[in-house]
Image (cartoon, rainbow, N blue to C red; front, side, top):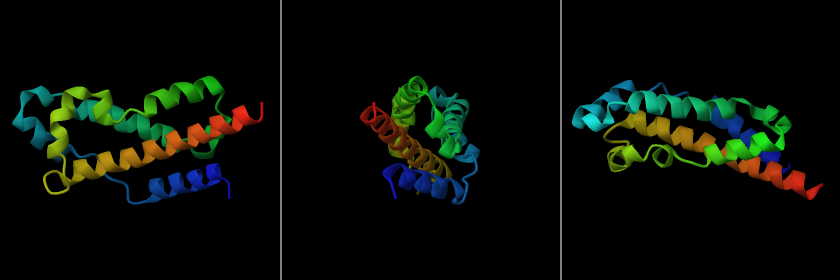
Length: 131
């Protein structure tokens, strides 16, 4: 099995595992601590939706043109905290004990993000090797 096939299989496994509902209650718990986090729910939703969207392409990722691969790679290599640095202070509070649903949602998003990024990197390497 090629590395790309292995990654596609891993992506499918992660996506078919128990889906995590959006962690509204956990987000509200953190929002109540500090008004700076008022936009946490829409920001997290946008981020997780984008990651899930890329992951849902599955095998169709292999048909993407090179410019789209480069663009998505640039976007997907950034974690939630990289993309939204205003929430960096929350990182230490997002634990399985404190906000388990939020922690699980971010972890799952990171899994998908990392698999898609690795898949796209391998696809680019394969394409440049055959040119």
